[in-house]
Image (cartoon, rainbow, N blue to C red):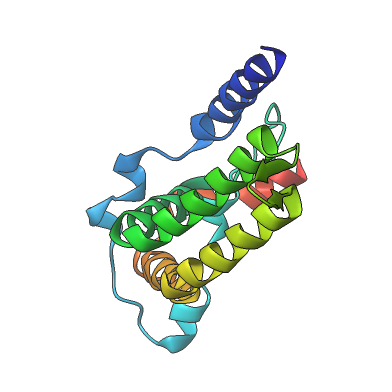
Length: 173
């Protein structure tokens, strides 16, 4: 019961600290500030800190911001579209949980004794090929590539607001 209370407190503090500091969607998706960079030099000098690092004095963690939320949404999409990966991970995690809960004592089946070590070996013999065929590496690299394209494309195309010009003045005061 104490662990459940600790998890709910952690989720509540995460929601209060991280999600309350996000920029509003009207600012993040403001189509009036979209402009094409004049040249490659201007495109490579983007202000990622405008949407990533919006620090608050009362926040216990540094804020990852809107781009972190975007990466999270892409990760959920990647898992939904790769159902084999979800099944393989659930099989391995469920197998570990079942072996830890029910397989602590050796079981006598006929002349054979099934130990916890042999259960883990069976889980790995079945689970690792399942995980391999689910292609976790291609899912990971798709997530990295899609996140990079969306984040850098957004940062290049959206001009930062006027408040970002005065952020260095406000920090030095």
